[in-house]
Amino acid sequence: MFDALKMKDACVQWIRDFFEENGPGCNAVLGISGGKDSSVAAALCVEALGKDRVVGVLMPNGVQHDIDMAYLLCDHLGIRRYEVNIHDAVEGVKNAIPAELELSTQSLTNLPPRIRMSTLYAVSQSLNGRVVNTCNLSEDWVGYSTRYGDAAGDFSPMCHLTVQEVKEIGRLLGLPDVLVDKVPIDGLCGKTDEDNLGFTYAVLDRYIRTGEIDDPATKARIDRLHKMNLFKLRLMPSFATNLPELAD
Figure 1: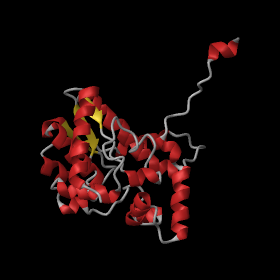
Figure 2: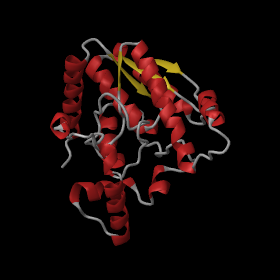
Figure 3: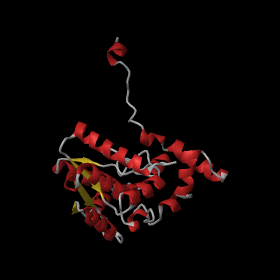
Figure 4: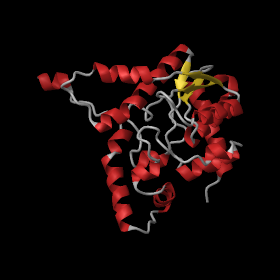
């Protein structure tokens, strides 16, 4: 049985310990989308560090239809927020690509989150910050993140929590239901997470925690995605041969 209170307290203490070791007095800086993950991550940081040390960065790409949810979160927690529209930056990179090089659909989809992460680090370094990674275990399990985009960060407080567990902690933290229960959508291709994945987070979370799943085809798809995307969770492979000995 998942103990939301025990896990919430452990996350909060872990965040405090991380900052004590890796930047006493620094701020937690995170991208705010208005979804459950950025909402819960921000709320955990507020409880750990105080609202004055948490900074939200809103990064719409042109018009963001649900940006009011991001405003709601920042107002609810009482944290500072900065809004940086990345539209011109995204278009600038696309327009600078040589005409003979046609960017793939996947490249175009992943460009905005990578520019958002560059923006987030620019803000963070200017505010004595540490960037919060807001990914959860469910997303990481099947590689549902952009490498060097939303998958980047300086610390990851929710990487061992499934979607259902993140939502439980969000309720415990007193976040508005409209944020906790907001339909997960990547904001990149116009589809929900579950539409893109081909299965629900409830099914995935049950499989992660118990190994139980009803549909063999869904199990095969989850296993394939997990294996295919494990590289995203590993350190970059590096050539570790002893070069002086090799020269001999």
